Amino acid sequence: TVVGNKSSYLIRDAAIEYIGRVTKGPDPFFLYLPFQNIHGPYTTDVKFRAMYEKNPDKFTAGEMTMFGYITEMDDAVGHIMATLNNTAAYNNTVIIFSSDNGAPPATNDVNHKHGENPGYIARNYPFNGYKTLIWEGGTRVAGFISSPLLPTAVRGTISNELFHVTDWLPTIVGLAGGSTAKNLPSDGHDIWEAITTAGPSPRTEMLYNVNPLCASGQAGAPKAGLRMGKYKVLAWCYNISGINGSTTTGPVNGSGMFANGPVLFDLEEDPAESNNIAQSNPQQVQKHTCEHDLTLLMHVCVCVC
Image (cartoon, rainbow, N blue to C red):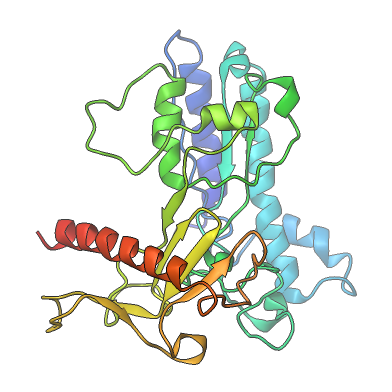
């Protein structure tokens, strides 16, 4: 912070105080901890960086700071969990840990490009892309759930089902015995059954970007994407009729593999998105593109109105 305090320490201390206070009563509680670690700029307490300075042949100077930054968060989470473990509430608590995007490009001493393609960096490999891109490397992230409420059969297992951050709202509300019936329509699904039974996710589709307009938005090209089942279609960007002078709605051709229009990938067979199968699967491209057009029109209508 501007006065020299570490944000991870402030978050840690506030969480510990909160847990100590709310667990004295019978009511359920919700605690959201958005750590700044490891968002740039990378900086860490010297004691955590020192753990990696002992191995100068193994870590670059940037990695010493970055890994120290991660360890700083890990240490804070450990203190918070120790506090929770010492309360009766722990046995009725679900801990969810997840990232919000893939790793970003950074200085060369931590980027470690994988191969000739600059889109592949070691931290996101084997996925293509990084933060601000809607390739899998920028959007597919790891997460885990820990709780005494999880059935023994699924503890320590890995799920490769399709889940999205919007699924946490109905899932958490349902766990707390609440209802989202009075909420506005949601994009999220309650995924607790899929998690606790190792069953299929109720989610079969995912929109990758709500602002695919060619001349705006944070995401870099390709700016439009939709997944349906195992297939993912990407388009360079979109024109929307009535916006920025456009009189038509549809995908715009780009460069490279996007020169002939949208591209298609089978993420089960090709999670690295390296093999465009659009030409051999025109019906899938058409189906995904039409569905994407309708989804975009609904989102743009909401945004413009």
